[in-house]
Length: 235
Ligand code: ADP
Image (cartoon, rainbow, N blue to C red; front, side, top):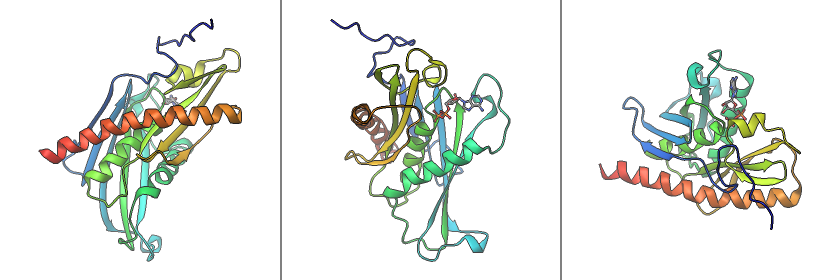
């Protein structure tokens, strides 16, 4: 009999962190807003717009523009981080746009921009996924036409074992055997991928298994998001 793989946190390989929480309509000044939390990672998203794009040369007459700004707040990690944009935050902002664009119907907003500000107030890895989850709910709350929302989660590998939802220790400090691989992914409710990144080494077979693992977990996240959106709708 093979021994059950032990994670530092005591979680089973296919277990996400807890709690998983979502709340919609938390920032009154925004046109749409939401919070998503998984374990110790907490993301807030606020949506402003659609509004006229300025400066004018950035306007697209063919369709509206989604502009995401991801920001990890100084106090979100133990060692205070330097405020302001970085190469990492610019990359994650772009990835967030790519993960959300396939479900957004913004053809009807030529020359307009929809701004999504994502602030990570506490970071323990998986912040891009939490940010995407919060942003999807905030866009729906703002009444932006969407085919559906999206749900994001990472799967990965610790040494040889496939795991779900890596925390900071697993993402950056785990160094046994083959080390760790982190694969953030985003899915539509019917299981189609809108975003996948692979950070580390993995075989084709294991990658397929990791996608299946995350696809199942994304469905659970979707239920939490849907419930939060329904609750605000009923208020
Ligand atoms: P993600 O948060 O989407 O997993 P990364 O893999 O880049 O993205 O980061 C993993 C984790 O590392 C973050 O969630 C955060 O806890 C930590 N981290 C990232 N950048 C910094 C930084 N500049 N200073 C301290 N911790 C950081």
